[in-house]
Amino acid sequence: MTENPFEIGSDEARHDIRWYPGGTNVSAKALAWSLAAAYAHCFCYSYSYLVFFLGRRNESFGWGCDPKYFLPTPIPTPDEYLDILEFRKSQLERALVNTSSEWCWPEEWGGPSWNTQIIYGVAKSVPSTCASLDTTYLHLVETRQAIRVHQFLLSEGGPRQFLMSLDRGQGLRDIRAFTSGTTKLIVIDPYAYAGESRESGRYVSELAKAAHLPELKALHVVFSSSRGNTALIRKGIARVARESGAKFTDTDSDLIHDRIWIADRERALVVGTSFGGLGSKAAFLLPLPGIDLKELLRFLDERRLV
Image (cartoon, rainbow, N blue to C red; front, side, top):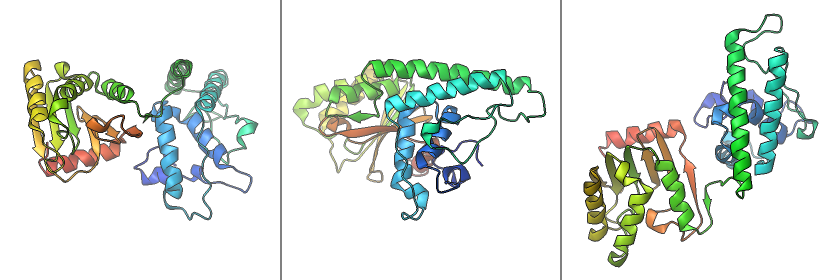
């Protein structure tokens, strides 16, 4: 069994036995929700990632299972995810008192087919080590903080699953939140320079703000001239970058279809529409898994696109 059952790119995680029912009375909900409670730290307590992961798993029939035997996983609502975190907190608190404690799953989940000690690496017959207790306490602190953040998001109308409901303003704020603190930004968007000349001023201003351009050291755009190459937009971005002291470069290529923003080659955001199209149609903004980012960067480097 893998240490991270929520790693999309790992074959070991995809075939982890804990994802599969051990009997006819075991529900897909019990399996997924118990794993989310036990391994929330593996996906940084991110509700959006959990929704993304379970959605992709359902769409692929459990990474290639026979559809006749695959049990789709019900995706928890924001309120249900808060319950999962609250359950996790209570179990970690219990484990710090009784180090041999195993998970005590809620009956309403349906009964998972797996269990283990809450404090990892501590045998029931051996006193707990300081390292194990420190790790468990750290997970407890993280869980408490995740609960506070999630409660705040619920009070503000619910944690967004990165779905833009025809709201360009919200989409721009999401991208701006992603690029915050970035020094070197890569924007892959075939339609980056598409658009009407008369709208170029607004477009350039919005992109500069979304990218935190005054804070950047470098901005690189991968675009496709076959999809649009409005001179006022291209020159406008170059001018604002120059005035901000950022190095600006771009590459013309038709090799990439998706729209992806990459921050410092460490994080990436998949944007479901071109920058100019934000808000015209509902679109998802989703974090790109690390293993996929690694492959994308290799692709960009090998083809000298960056």
